[in-house]
Image (tube, rainbow, N blue to C red; front, side, top):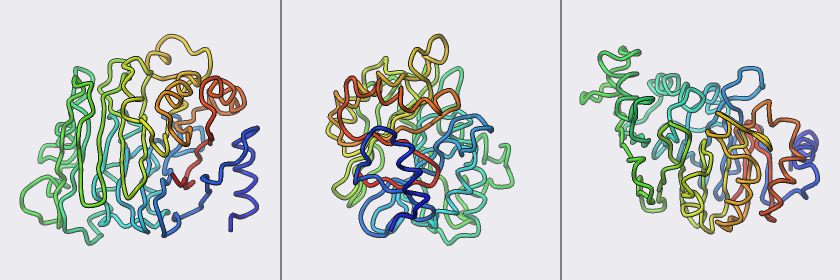
Amino acid sequence: MVSRNCFFSSLLALLSVATSPLLQAANTSCPSDGTYIQVLGSGGPEVGDGRASSSYLIWHNGKARVLVDVGGGSSDNFGRSGANFEDLDTILFSHFHVDHSADLPALIKSSFFDDRKKDLPVYGPSGSHWMPDTTDFLESLFDIEGAFRYLADFMDDGRRNGYRLQPVILDVENKKIQSAFSGPDINVRAISVHHGPLPALAWRIDIGNKSMIFSGDMNGDFKTLPILAKNADLLIAHNAVPKGARGVERNLHMPPVVIGEIAAQAKVKQLILSHRMRRTLGREKETLSEIKIHYSGPVGFANDMGCFKP
């Protein structure tokens, strides 16, 4: 049963949009049956917004299977969620801005005290003048000459920590859907998206019979996300800028009307807005109005630790 506080939080967040039966709030773990997305971080790079930075956990039948981005504060919420690190199949990065990657060292250090024995693939974008590629990113942290070189065992061949991190690079110059992790009940794919000059990916995870899309940070210029998101059960899109955004912020992020266009083009069944920054917080009614110009499906707003059922 959803608590009274959770009920009113959901009601206020959705404003004039009827609460979708697919939307569920949670304080800790998601339900143990079925597939859920748990929001470990619903904010951006601001420390004053009261939110952890971008991070999402996919649960399937009671196990945390996929972690998407690891922004500041999310490692603490990973612990609060009740997830077991050894259950993770993979970690996916949309890009390596601080608000999407800063808590990886904290999470990896914590895993030293867990029982993981299986190597962990870490997928992310290729690099550029502005950003390292995925291998360089991990090595800059955990290699023998990295910032956290005392954790170098996680990158070497000795397996002294029980497992190794295995970086896998996806080429952002390839604007087509690229395959990443796959297993008996899971298929992970990505596509390049436009985030100004930064190499960036959007992700699609099909697990069981559910499909979930994570836009990451993007402005929509590549027109690639609707291809990846076609007929998905749920799209998490980043609501980092408001209506009328201009200049640098518009070059990096999509305004609400573009989010609505993409959701409609892809025919997604449910839309959740995350990466909520102070410039968009408090403007939910305006945001919904802009989205509804194109998209008529259910829309929700993400908060830390909330669970959403695709």
